[in-house]
Image (tube, rainbow, N blue to C red; front, side, top):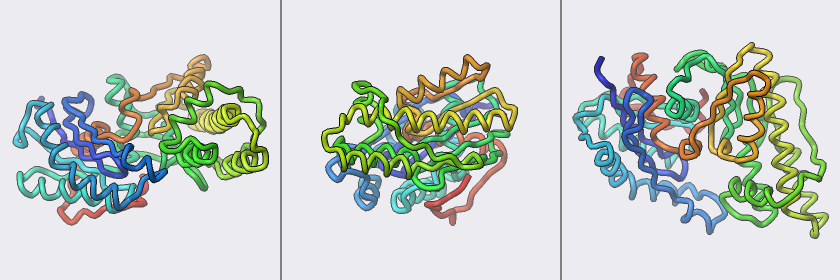
Length: 328
């Protein structure tokens, strides 16, 4: 059987990334041009600046991805860009480039949902992983419990009603004076503290999440008690939100009867969250987590998801548009 090479293009937020993946599982190249240093001084991603930097980087990053994979455009079977969800201007840069490329080299265009990409990051890390399984997606823009029925068939069992968990981490980091990006900085400071501050957990009747209550509680504590130990506050926040994630995940596993759990998204790089979820293996649940470099936005995961869309027969026309609030 002929190997299939997909060229993934990811530009949904502040990473310009292009990758070549073989048969959905093997990375031949994965080039990531990060803008973290640029946005750090603003305390968060500035959409207009992100878009302009994508424009400057996209051709250079694509050229490097092809060189690293030791192939040329003729070897590519499909071009698989992210078309949502994300920042509309940023998405349009990668998608427009992909459409132009598809037209110029006469290769199929296969649009990819960014959320599907985060799920697929696990297929690259674990060659043996196959659906069905439960996926907990935790990132800056999403918090969802997803029943992965097949490579391109999904059912959302629960989602956040307000902030995504990554947003909550960023806001807590800003409040305690850590700056951007918040997630890694909260994780680091929490290691120096004790989880000895009681914070509220929001319980909803179904499998949905809500992080606005705990975020507000942290803001109020920090404001009303200026001398509060910031490391303890970060450790307590991290422990409480992790408990909320685990409680809903266990309910979803019970509801579906699934014994396999995959975790994806930028927040899955958090060391405390990873360690706590691995404890589920003592309860006969097989837990998968992507390599650290595949947790945050990258084009390899997009190329992997694109491969499964491509072999299922998905093709897109050149009028494919960016969808900033695209659902799975």
